[in-house]
Image 1 (cartoon, helix red, strand yellow):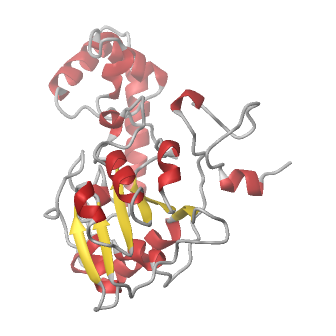
Image 2 (image 1 turned 180 degrees about the vertical axis):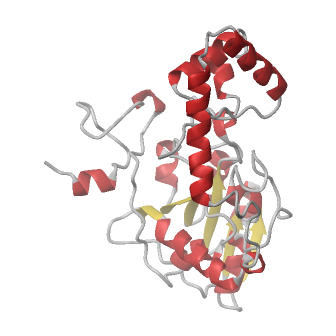
Length: 324
């Protein structure tokens, strides 16, 4: 039991350009089996168009009745007619410490260790909590919005630390390390500054800017500047671990030689503590790649089993659990 719903303004894209022949789009989508259509703005146009198509017997009333019956069955089963308003009795618990602890656990369990040391027998991670001077850099190091990405409070995401409460990666580092360790935070330090401070190591947090849906379409899949320049400047002169914040694999092969360690943190959301838990060894890395990480976009699409499957990092889950 259930019903089929379109994406937001989805039927507009049946034609090219979108909405070029809306009457046809409504007719085609209803005949194709859509029961509910997400029409957020021009709903009067949709209602009048559908009504006209029914009156002209292009769409039979029986098809409308079928769609309505599916929708009503689901609503009755969910109890929406008896209890149309959400139960708010637990609302005050949203964002409680128990929730944040669970989110923190999810972050650290999803972290992927892609490189650890320039030599096999010389790992970079875990990092020591007690050292002389540590550099934390990158525009993603102290930014909730960048950690969360799109579809979080705002559709395309937000930038900065004003959208919610939680812990950025920088504040989590400050809370985790030994008080005697000097932390220097610069979003985009100049090369002269990097070379003159004798840092024990650096944590470089870079990645994508927030996006959702087609706003994130990208044929290059590169790390936006100043990320690449920062990796070269910092990791080329200081022992470093790069923490990559992204919603998908990105082009990183050109920068791998500069890095001592590389961590895929994906989009950790509000709980930066989960990232720091594994960087400093309080918990081990357990995250495994469920997607192939390509070398160049020219290889795409690339899937396990392809004749020329030469990824930068393979789909660990598939290659280790579905081997022939």
